[in-house]
Length: 176
Image 1 (tube, rainbow, N blue to C red):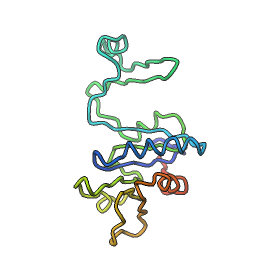
Image 2: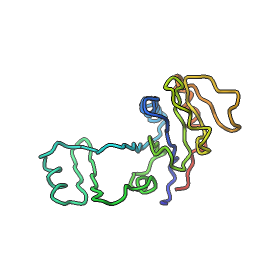
Image 3: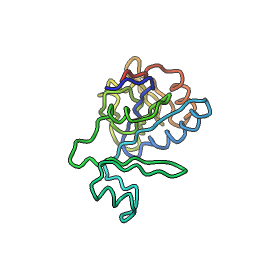
Image 4: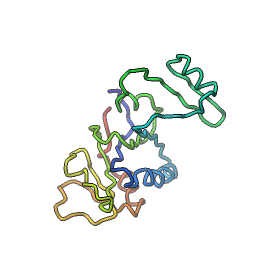
């Protein structure tokens, strides 16, 4: 794995639990605190970043291994895997610019410190009882009495509480 000084924290939970919504609340608050954050979002679907027929799509289809599309507002690097294995989380982190935090939405089973977003109303079992890498849970329900020692329980409806925990916590310091 590549060495980085960023704090890496996985944001995990079942679909519909509110992972993206929580990140949307945290990111501007981190910026207000003078912190930079990169986000890696995993998808199980194909990524279509430009319409078919546009120059960058045509160049990828013609065989380019990578196409970097740039504008005055942003740039996007598209790398065609062409039957290669999907890169691991460590490889993706190595491609990012330096930041204070790398927040990873998805990669549910990667061995990095994680915060689980858990809503019992979804009817899905919590992940934290089976995953020792989950160091905190943000939930809209009270903590169970049988909570394992050392696991932090946060109120999902209070993103400021999650932010305070993130800023104060050293548990997500990863040596990648």
